[in-house]
Image 1 (tube, rainbow, N blue to C red):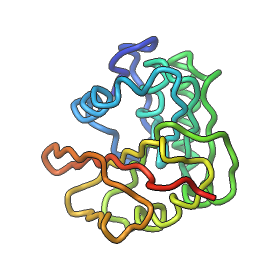
Image 2: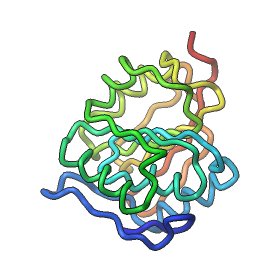
Image 3: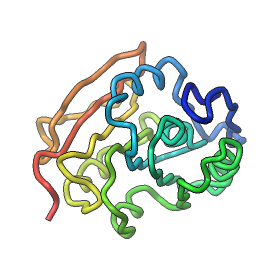
Length: 186
């Protein structure tokens, strides 16, 4: 796995051991960043279920100003820190070893521009997050949320008050869903 473009272009990232992560394929990652290219410069990223930090680090490499990486597995967050050092982007990244929902409920940071949500497939982790996101003050109607999920992981946006589907792209069995909030959290 490597960084596709930007200041860390071509640098290879380490992967956490034990098969704990499923990194975004270069094709999917490249297509996602092509779609959001105009939003990346100086953006604040949040990488939930960060794994190796692949998505947030790609955002930093392309000109993002800050990225927060959240993963519950210590091995993953240790790897993210190493990858930030490898790419020389550690000064713009902050790593949190904690459950993603707990992070949203307890941490208070300046609002994020782009949020990557890449949970383990078919584990039921998306629904609790999506229920809480409209109430989280780290987001606004300008925040773009990007979910990577398997086709079988169904999202019911019509049943999610406060969320508006913006776009959806399919890559084989992988679906990338883009959404925004309809109102700012209070």
